[in-house]
Length: 408
Image (cartoon, rainbow, N blue to C red):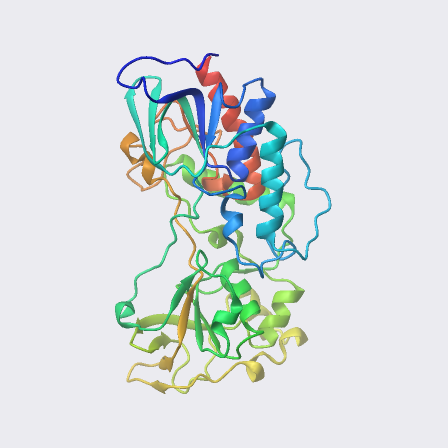
């Protein structure tokens, strides 16, 4: 395979047979597979990454998120993480691990390179425009993940709220919230992690979301994971946009989460109706600020059964200050800040010139989970079922093999 390319008007672009966009778990897995199949980094393929250094999205995680509290970090192909210190920040451990993998393979990742657009000027050739210059390739493996496109839903009156707002992407330190009244928004694992961490610095957190908590008492083992992947794959092969992680997995209902529920920390208080300058109106806690409604089926079942592990939940849950309205169950309560644990969208805007989105808003992928039929030569990893670390590793391998076959 040759990397020579001299056809105008792209003679000034650096050409590679394959370009991998993104150096997170999925992108590195793809790069590692290309390397093992005999392709030479910097000659046959290149890896572009928008970050200043190794680690992907992990390098931006808050220091209080230790490796032991993070979702499982799956080994990169042929390069086990072995026995890391689970008390160290995940951002440090993973950044060092990814950096060691890059050095081990001699990947020479091109960074920081933000891809602005991918176009296809002719069959079998993609033009990749970045802030570090232009590249061309015969195949593109896209592994850009979600970190750069945080989701903050719109609510009436949000523009009038004057307090600080944070998102999973911008969260750094629980000390920023000491003694504040914090509204935590979102039904996923990030929100529950935030609530547990905030318990060390404030007694005044309020958990709300657009839906009831999806607590899941199942054991999160490989067989369960395969079922989840199958459900997600069914969606994305039909061109539908992937749903949130928690809608597919649920929240782990284990001894730790049950303890925090019983302590009144992980207690769902209702749904946002609107915001004001220094308050939020919630549908749920009215008429006295003390009402606790449904906690989702799994927890409700335990409460009805009188489970002793939740015996103190009602007593430990804060009565929210504020006042009611003329609408049943509505309650207006003061807040100092908002922490959005509302997830991310897939970062695919740079692929829009290829017109790969379906009428359902997602991208149709082949049954292999990575091939994009609408743009032969484009492969998505870290999308849909491969958004998890273990799924990303497998998808990276598949995409690399598929890209090589595409060239042949």
